[in-house]
Image (cartoon, rainbow, N blue to C red; front, side, top):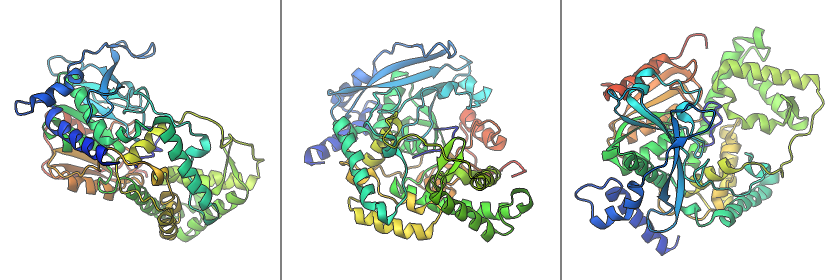
Length: 503
């Protein structure tokens, strides 16, 4: 998922089908070897589950107690004796040996956002009760960060989000094909195995290497899907699972993008109503229709003459591409008012970075690798993308043409396995803001239905992407998550918290 929240950063022949079946057997029977697991399966992963890690201080700026290591995992769990890759993990030990329960594995989302430093991230406000009971364990997803990172050599322009436009569609198709081709040329052998199923298997190797019978987990955004896949593959090893800002596991991933457009439209309508009531403050219109017209006029004008904001020249498409703008109504009103003023000032436009400029493309490369290989539901027909983009542009004018635009997945080779179906009785706590347009409330409810043993906590009036353990976060939600992590008791029924007053 292409998370934009600043706090948590964000497609084979018969032989591979056989490998996929073998990998499934390894995952379900062997990753947590028990007496009933075949001896050969146990032996195949023993070099990984019994490896000894060399822990060392992560870096000079980190606390002495924060330690990092690299463990080896199979690139292909269907061939555990074949090529290996390195997985970067970190650990901050529990503050109480007496009260320690185990490990709390952390994932920030993405797919592919760096997770190694989450245990000591100053933006993560872990309560003392959680710190006392758990070793906080971070890791970089396979192919991302320090975990044998993948790079397709993408330029800045090839990483940018682009809306559907009839006049540029042929170029957009070529660009998507080029990105897929670059990734195939740079990492073709790895791409089929950069999947959430394999990342869940990696998590279980981490569990075994750390000597734990079970792991607890806190995942945000895409991390909720990763956590759900773990519960599906390793139900006996999933302990206390907290899923913050959940995806709809039946809509991975194109449907998820299109759901963002639907949710962005809902958030935009809410913002227009809120802002209209404050016309004397922001001067953006006295009715919701007038506010909408002001914004769309700003976008149209910026497409003709870019608006300078914080040293960047923004086109109308640039403004709309930031669909997180309307996460927070007050911040959105302030930003749109500032953009309107900047457009009226006529400040000279400064040239920005070239679209052909090279940049660190690991996040984009890893994200496309997972999103394209996780599911085989991506269409390979460019005309289908055209039809859906035209339809969604009309349905959801704010973001529909971005969300439905063609992606590199249209030209990706299939992943090593089909998509995981989430359907189990895992005991998880799902936490969701009412007004999150990245992972909408209706997506969180879909995850709740798929994990039949879960409970859902909704923050009524809650804005933004990500709820728990944030600076200035929701104390009610934090308390419920902490109670679950420290006692293991899920609420008897779904819960409601309320956002702080003053929105």
